[in-house]
Image (tube, rainbow, N blue to C red; front, side, top):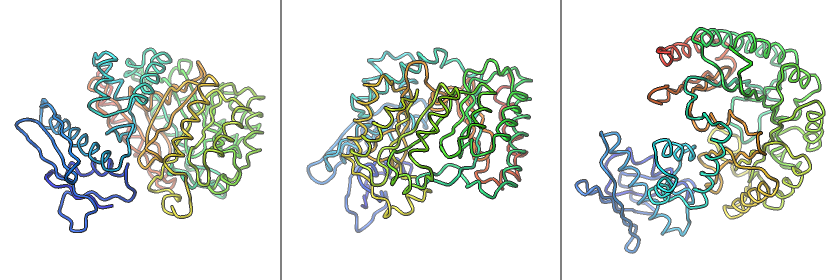
Amino acid sequence: MKIYIRGLDDHRFQRPLELLAQLFFEDCNVSLDEIEDADLEIQFHLDEPKKAVSGELGKDIQSTTTYVEGKDEKESFKFKKKAVNFVFLTLLQDHTKIEQKWGILTGIRPTKLLHTKLKNGMTKEMAHNELRNDYLIHEEKIQLMQSIVDRQLKVIPDLYNLENEVSIYIGIPYCPTKCAYCTFPAYAIQGKQGAVDSFLYGLHYEMEKVGEFLKERGINITTIYYGGGTPTSITAEEMDLLYAKMHESFPNMKNVREITVEAGRPDTITPEKLDVLNKWNIDRISINPQSYIQETLKAIGRHHTVDETITKFHLAREMGMNNINMDLIIGLPGEGLKEFQYTLDETKELMPESLTVHTLSFKRASEMTQNKQKYKVADREEVQQMMNEATVWTEKHNYHPYYLYRQKNILGNLENIGYAVDGQESLYNILIMEEEQTIIGLGCGASSKFVHPGTRQITRFANAKDPKSYNDGYEHYTNAKIKILDELFSKK
């Protein structure tokens, strides 16, 4: 699908319009420069004095809206861009008869938008009206956003006042095998012990130096999250040494509210590793089935069995793991509503404390995206039915939605939702999504988000994604992060 946009000369409009067009059409190209073989032509009119934007698609489809002047050129363009997006979306909705329930939003964090409006003094009614009228978000999504915001503020009452603390993300870049949909730093661990040893040496160094800085500045840690990859891919002995280094390096560990270790691949879980988690009082883990259909697991490259997921869940429970999360994915290849209902039925037999329901996203660098013809997935309507089923099932079993995020190229333009029973929500998941405090990323592929305590401006910094580059440069990454932290907390 090729769409030619007339009347917009500023190419800053192009990428936002392309993202919206991709909600309606696969392999869509939007051009602000004339093309002869366009499938659709849309004419825009910008009336700068009246702050109005209008558009036409053919003879019968038209849309108009207005915008306000910003305090500077950057803010003015932001308001104008939102108006252009509004007109573009309404034209395409009229043309295709497809309603986009998230309206013009294509970003990852819808609930952050609502948090911001409420923090700035808006009432819920005023905020909802803006989401409805300015962003074209449907009522069901607004209510979902509000229920999540309410739950987050109940779970973390001081959510808006954590800017002088930090959370820590620790990336372990190894897995038994790499899943077809995955774009996380994940390298098969077999036969790579030398690289693993070098990586862990660098990670220990990062933990020690960052810990020294935090101690010197009197900065406490809110949450610690071990992700990856699969952090339980390393040996029990290596895990033990890593957690010992955590307690040795980081300040006031007794005040850390939550420590999570992803044990997502059941084939990495052993009694010895669970003993180590118990030793260090870590009881929040993830054991991720993704699906309870064996053929699906084989198709996506997860080399464990359904029985193994169930067995390892029971083992973890028997050995004292009292806060277990499980991930499910809607729309995996070959799966429809029937298969997803079966997965929910199997989940009922285990009843983890929290459940994250992901909608499959075709991430650009994944094997699945690069070989789309091999992976047949459900259509938009059936994917929506599966999400509806998840909503009904979680409500019936007393799970509450507590965080939400979206991704580009997500099936059905839907979302990923984290559910939990009361009191078992992941604090880290809330903090990483709402961007209310600095998250320091340590390890391979770990990204840091530095939130300025005063201006709330976000600075991002990423470690190398591959182990060799990380092993060669961990001192550089450590020093660079400490320099940013020093500037960020210079007045503390």
